Amino acid sequence: MVSLRVVRYWCSRVLLIGLLLVGAAPGLAAAQTSGAEGTDRSRFVGDWVGTLTVGQTDLRVVFRLQTDAEGGLVGTMDSPDQGATDIPIGRILVDADTLRLEVPSIAGAYAGVIGDSARTMKGQWVQGGRRLPLALERTREAPTVRRPQEPRVPYPYESETVTFRNDEADVTLRGTLTYPADARGPVPGVVLVAGSGPSDRNAAIMGHKPFLVLADALTRRGVAVLRFDERGVGQSGGSQEGATSADLSGDVEAAVEALARRREVAAGEIGIVGHSEGGIIAPMVATRSDRVSFLVMLAAPGLPGDAILADQLDRRIRRQGANRRIRALQRGTQERIFEILKQDADSAAIASQLRKVMIQSRGISGEATINREVRRLMDPWLRFFIAHDPRTTLRAVDVPVLALAGAKDQQVAPDTNQAAIAEALNADANPDATVRTLDGLNHLFQTADTGAPSEYGRIEETFAPAAIDVIADWIDEQVGLPGE
Image (cartoon, rainbow, N blue to C red; front, side, top):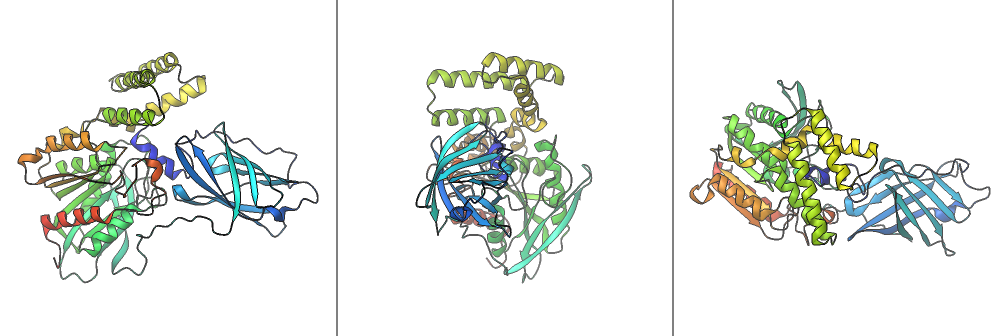
């Protein structure tokens, strides 16, 4: 089952999570500690690059190996297509022409045999019980992660770390506030709210920092921007365990209040820009707080969570080439699980019903595995998301709204969700509601080929400038930016 959280967890856990099941990597033989006596380790020193093929996705892998002071091999691993760099390699063992290494943080391992020329290796990558062929070549120009849109210091505006509290939840949050340095008076402000899963203030994903790029662009246009580490992430306290979208909305409301207290910010011109799940949370806050004067919803769900997840599952199994019967079975099992999770029953009864479905579907076996899946499905966040209908909240919103989506979004289907948002806002009859879908962009508002999440890290662009312009121009229409 794929949720909105999958991609963010996949990226934050660094490599291959979400594409391969993560399990214990096979350990290196205990008798092998430093390689056979007299083994020439220098042949393995250098940068090695290869490509893993997982289904229809190709992922480049780079091993960077060097010798330490004692002559042993040490190194790091990169996954350029996922924006992951400098992943520590654990034990590295050499025996004659064979190299074995472990990558503990992702429970992965590699074993390969070096060629006679010492320029190639043929071997296997092992992770989560799966073995994939991985041929490596020595390279002097290993692929790197390029993010050309990321701003560099010094910035042409003020930037400072801020602290604020959600007293009701007893959580202290920290983030970054950027604002124009030469403004003659208070300026409009926005709070940025990231999508699902633990997120830092930059909404970092696959080597990209979309909120850093967006905050930079908006601040240069005259907007004060507050972005913050979510609870339990980075410099913020608390934990997301057991927290639902409704709980997290309290943190966003506290951020709005903190922004309103700043002398640099016009208290009557504050908005919220929410991406994905952040687009669910933003309207919640707007219906409660008089501080919020406009909303920008980016790739936001307009339908209940069960419909979102059902669409994601169908897209995934279609890409995998499943036939109509398999797709129907998958949908049926998922629908049964959703109905169970929506019940207002005690946890023991729900857990019992979920176990029965898993056993009957024959898709999961083993008591430990079933128990783990039951715990995952009973996560309060997931149960809230499945049952929550964003349209109910949107109908109560009485401030201007911009709802943007990318036409190639494969996580939140733009056609059905944008239509639902427009209906809830009564966009046709409401001049304060703008619902637009931008051609060629994915869920992260990158210019994409297919829009699949597997492309996110390979795309150098972090946030399409055209989308940023639409956001900034619309905010300008609502509040009038300094110097415009």
